[in-house]
Length: 306
Image (cartoon, rainbow, N blue to C red):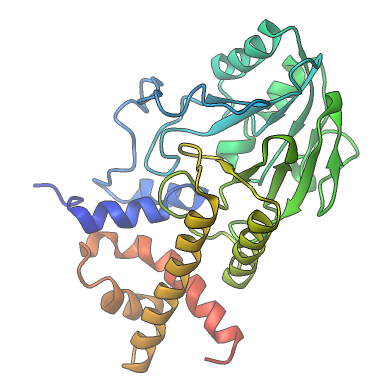
């Protein structure tokens, strides 16, 4: 008997994908989060994601597919068309085959890796950074979280990366994690979003919901003001309707908040009690997962006196 089936179950899992928080589900017997190829290390369907590109960015899909990482972690190689240096965003897991593949793709274009950037601290994005930096000849790794830096430079709002003639502007987007950043590539009118916006579904939070809502609003305004045409996420395919997807993200969070407030009005007090009301049509085996998201919403409402 399948305990983890049905349209609502899949929709919930996709909403909760893309964060290290889902690793806790490994403790629940029978969960579907392991991709069928995860143990073998084979990639899933790469046709839509691996190799997707803009004029300056190329995606290399890491071989770590699962329901928590979708098709796998997107590693991005970014370089000016005629440059001899490249920047790599989110090397991904500590998988030497993947890391060497990234280096080989850079070398095939007559370039070398000069810098590594990290969008946020979760290990599916950072675990291989140290190994990759060493394989690339001891290059620096810049991250907002000092624990993931190699070298003296971090990342903060407004920082501009100019390696190899690039212009990458750092946007602080806390919420998915408190150290989350995005990178604006104006020449391609594209934003690397990390896990703040995913190619499929929406993300859960390892940070504060208030920060995340502010970041979504800011990204929406930035995308409109700067005529952004593409979002390049940390998981899933590229997004060519940035305003539409960001509107969906914002509407989804507001809808969930309204549902949580309605549950509180009927007497629910704990995250579990809210889940029992809001997720009544979802298999109860998934309720421990839903509590992650609901608790963030309760914290947000409590901060505002609700």
